[in-house]
Length: 384
Image (cartoon, rainbow, N blue to C red; front, side):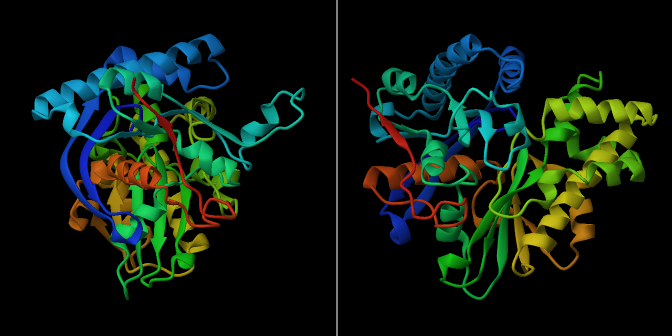
């Protein structure tokens, strides 16, 4: 799994038996492999859709697949695991464009296209992975959901319901990655009550602001910079008018809405307002926390008793404090309390989706992403 934070490749070694409701899963090992500064710079450039060329994207597609194969083989060597003992590999890919029906970027689509369809694009050639690791590779999960009428994200509510739904307890599984996405689990065996969507940004705006601050910091560790500042209420209220926050469900988002283009505008507004770096980070953190608060209150059918936080944002103490202050009736807990490392959730999730593909079973619930039927997600690449 390589997410919107662009910080590295998450690799999970997972033993799975059964499928569907009989799935049994055990995490054997997990590692988060950081990208070099050169790779981060390349990925940041290539995830800016208004600046990157087709030549660059084509090159990146092959280069990423090859690079990931090297990383995976090295990690297997470090774990002393023979790749021949593994059945298959599942790869989410690196999202470079996510253009669901509600995206504001749709106004920039060339008018020459007769069918301006929703689309999503994940790079990291699975054939490179299959050839170099000599394993079958399941990939391209989002595109199949889109073809089935969905928005292409979020894709893990099936896993969340399968593993973490508890009869009698209403709970949320909430990932604070680059983008904030959650799964509402109803506390019953009725899968039609499951709800999932992207609330907006989590780490994405915070990381961009720190990376553009001249401090050489890639992120606000523990939210320490934000904790020293004071949110600017005028800018905060202005930024909370972002149209995505009021969109109805289903919905998903990404860097296209909450990335460099938006931050150029907001950083300029913060500069004109005379905000210090701590005040800027405090305002962005307050924006993220309030967007999550509004998502819980405006879109969930009822307030959960507990919410389990995963992803890099779950380690941001100031962000967690602000979310908790706005939602005092919810008990926010660490995802690790569910028996898995918080940072491993998505990599584990795509291993399970890969297993579902290989046995030919669906991995979506109708309606969550907008699709009308259950869909088997993924494509298969075979080695020689």
